[in-house]
Length: 99
Image 1 (cartoon, one colour):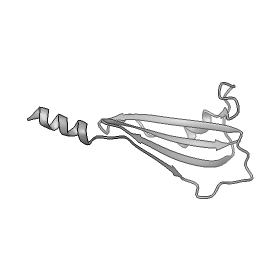
Image 2: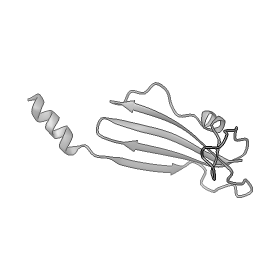
Image 3: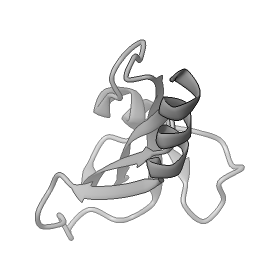
Image 4: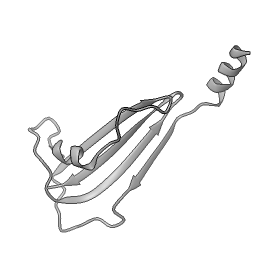
């Protein structure tokens, strides 16, 4: 019986990616210089915390040079939420772009 349930889960499980903009219109007066991201992985629906805009703002990296030094984002151009779901877990991210 357990083998049948496991087989059904494996056959019906799939991957889903969903991206949503929190800000319907971009603030075009703010330049796209920095990009910050905060992600959380959950397994079986259990995660330790939720992704935060404030943590994403603190992790700002230059868009043109992702290996450059990080700095805090003070002005936000746009905020996006991304959810990637796979077989038994999911990855929830918030991305902030600004200067």
